[in-house]
Image 1 (cartoon, rainbow, N blue to C red):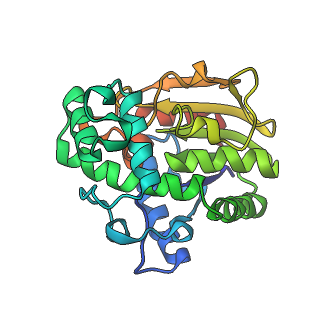
Image 2 (tube, rainbow, N blue to C red):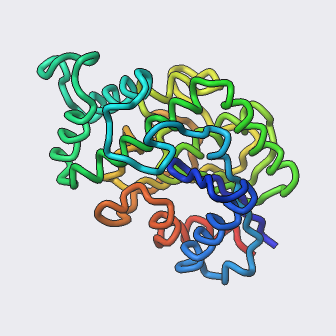
Length: 276
């Protein structure tokens, strides 16, 4: 039987449940979405989800879920958001400079460029960057990696599906702990994000490029062309040995939602050869 292990992205903190209960709840959502297009019933696939949001434990407005209040971001998260805006082509020197430009202005400017609802983009920025910074620049990073490494060792998955920040966790973990995985499927991945993510990966890039972890048999990446996090595209410009890089539209502001990636036909086609 094919064994799938999944690891989630940002904005999944569930203070009302234990980590095991939160993993079960979110895993059920992923099961349902993945079942939509898979060539075999998802019940025929052993799928487990690794939950780690409790280890990052956001505080302040982010602790209550996604928020469009960007005035309370930490200096580190605000700086990451501004650099993200620059990666989308904003010239902050024409505003108030990187340090002084309000993050709200950055979010609204990106929303306008992409034709997206500004309030939704603000909520996205308010949830994504605090968790990204909490993972990349705190001792919790090693604890999160250990939780995934332990799950891989226990489950021996055929496929590891990693969404958003989870793809950064997966990349780090597979290099640090060298567990074997036949297939790494990254969806909506910010691994190549300049200044913010790529330089802080825990594996030295090869000739300026990242490389597939040597214990991974196949690496497949799927990114919506409008995904505000999966930048710059294609991933293959920044990472060697990615076996397949697929660009697949998953719909309007669904551009970064895990469920939308999981139920798209590109995901089903990518996984089909490894199911059985």
